[in-house]
Image 1 (cartoon, rainbow, N blue to C red):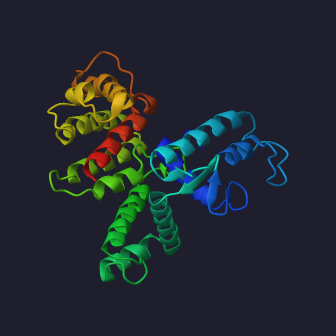
Image 2: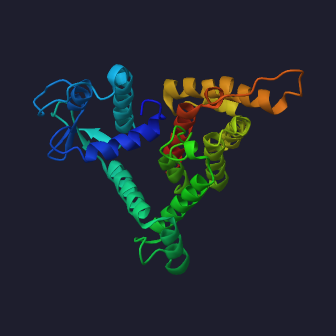
Image 3: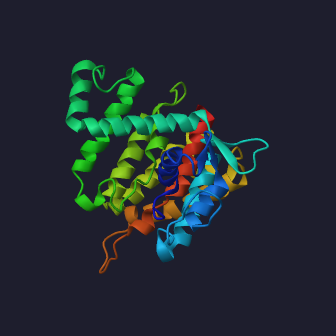
Length: 293
């Protein structure tokens, strides 16, 4: 779990916490300190404890990742602090929407890929998929995701070591943005291909597609180049600017290096760590969603 990217880990955590009644979740509210206590195997009156922390020597690393994911849920507006209630948090409407989406995914998993696809093709999803056109669109995205997984080596499918570079929820947000001033279909496609390239271990393509995303989005910010976005855009605050400068100075340089370097006597191939700018890309896409929605 500690190795998952933050948005993906946050989504998984919210689903887990929502089912944790009587412990971290009580009376429909989530307690941050109770979560930490459970992870650290501390007795805070929540019942019997296991004999040892679940992850052994790696428990501090896991605890840190989970607590960062909890804070991400708060920053993304999926959890909101309950006034006058200490460490208690409520699941927001945005968080409830994520839970509904995961509930649908679970239902479709039980039905199976072929049954969901057949229902979409023949009834528009009315018989077993459920919901209206928006849910049908979500189901088609799920079908494409499952079909893509079927083409991957077993170790790289969902549940293996590889995680999407860009969270599915973020791509869904981009897909649902109004296209009054900009058509986001290319950006969505770039993100989808970025995910599939990264998950399949195509790291040259990952570096080049990351560079493509940076070149594609500046007009959304009223700029003509990503260097202008990184240096001049003030709407996201200091932290956003520093994150964009990292993308400009690191991700772009990695992409340029692999795109333009001619053949040499010896080479070293890129690794996943070299081309992974997941958190910075998510910050960029989140700001695009905030501006447009």
